[in-house]
Length: 588
Image 1 (spheres, helix red, strand yellow):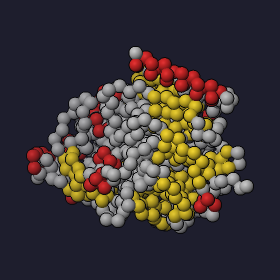
Image 2 (tube, helix red, strand yellow):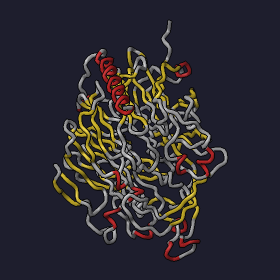
Image 3 (cartoon, one colour):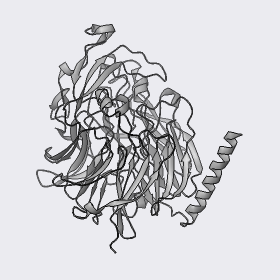
Image 4 (cartoon, one colour):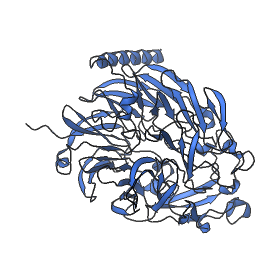
């Protein structure tokens, strides 16, 4: 009876919320044209990344270097309950309504003016979900009259924007094998495109395109060579060449999770996706480059075919991944000509610039102080390895209990930069990178694949490199690879970055602050303590002639779960779950 009562109350609440939404007027359908114009259309935030290219730049300038000191909270919305944990979501804003996801696969629609809840959706998760790095969700996508997001049991769900009711729900993989979705989907040409997580469980990473109206599969593209994709539910082409860089049947459990999602460049018509670590972590068990793990891929959104690839860490033995966002931008070459380029800051500690049309390597520059595993990259874009910093082969001994020789190396597997998206400023031409200075003791162990079990073959302990800071926000010149300025933070930086036409850079800290910096000098100009760690990505938009800033607050994510000595330092940070909205007060 209690369960029936709760369901009745939930249904009634949803109905009341829907009536509140209807009071705002019928939802205007979001079109492909709207999505492609998201950067210029400052009254909405329709995409993860504030534009499909993922630059996270807004031309708004009402809040600038002078006025930002007057910014104050407008309202705050609590996610409520005991389901707090890490909150890494980037909100969307559509026609005066904010859509924001939360931990445990939840979503809310909120009146952007008042903070009033319009509806809430709680996805019913089964027992036995296996998220690698906390029960987070990074955001949603909007198209037509629907809002879409992925769930921890590897489903994509489409909700009616006005009511929050489920329109369709599609399971794209078996969560019992270790698959999950935490990335925000991408909308391209009427398709919902998403990645998948689970590399620590020996899954095969893929990119999926679903019909936005029906949820039916348009195509899938596995990112590990030897696996076959699909088009309209039927087998299509093989990824790469089987056994070209994997031995035996290892490609069947090769990892390469696409767990951070992708970007889309309308100029080249290409999707850009990063791929995760090869499985297992123990690199001695899988000789070869292990394509296309730890790579950036360009994919044709019409067919799902890979057009080019670039591998940042061939034969990855440190869990460096390659999922970090690839951001399109114009690069002025030495000859004065502009190159259609793209940049990415990798977990391995290097900042890469590529030709986004061809994937040709342009440059790799370190953005952290130590990168022990490699001294740099050659002219062909191959890393120059330091072999002494690869953990030892367990089959040759060197460690206790059948373990390989342990080494200390930097960065740690949590990366010079992890999931948290950097931003590009169209004003300064600089990238702003949330980075971390830490290393790790790492060793390899024997391991055998078993469905749904962790498939690492490695152990590790993460340690900070410096006593006074771990996190560093850095401004990087992509043309020279030089760092223009940096801001040091005691705790790791784990949230995304926003840049604006007002000359500001916004990001958050685990200590609870959202901060604004001068985009040219790095001077801190404003901060506000939200009460819990900020590990999400800020946004900005204008409404009724005023500029708003919003960010989700709620400490969690991978650091307190995997962080070793660092986790011990941050163990007293309070959890939370709040959406904070700020603006300048109106002049009387």
